[in-house]
Length: 112
Length: 112
Image (cartoon, rainbow over all chains, first blue to last red; front, side, top):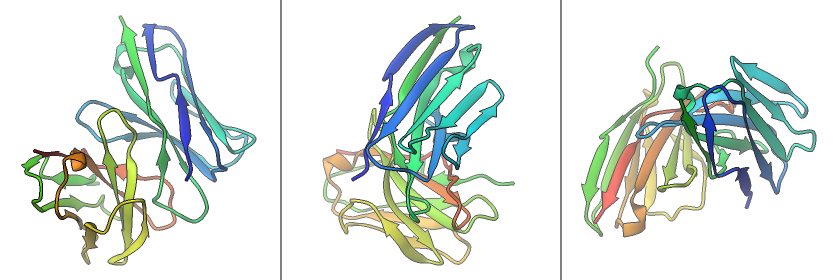
């Protein structure tokens, strides 16, 4: 089955620093999504990407759909304490709408 | 606009018992997907329901079953609970054909 490898597994950064994380797949995806999950909550959608090479921003967040369709990247600029949480990439392939394959998550800690 | 709501928030069961989890879709959404999230992992797709029928299933045994009702709310039923079924169960709703899923806060199930 499809596997997603997300890295890094965890990050400890200072407030104000920029953050980069990425996700790679053994298979091609048609859509890439990035979610953030806080403790005790469900994942919240941050950004959705639909075309290879697409670059999309949402405030301080920028994500890219890789040219090969097998990877995606998320950048957070000028991090703030409320950015703390777990970030997940997710891919959707074929016509299996609703079936997302998730990465293992990146745990982000921001020190004030 | 009402978001995805799940009940109960927490549940404790013993091995061999049966459990029913409930989900109300975000208003306007007609598709419901269920995911299992083990501690420290990304969510894993269980199945999706559209027009009250199962519309795709992940690698989960038949003792995991579901229902979707005419008002698009949904239930997840798990029979013969096993210790490994302990996890956060997430419900997500969407429009049919849409890749963007919107998650509820989940039901934390503990099997003792």
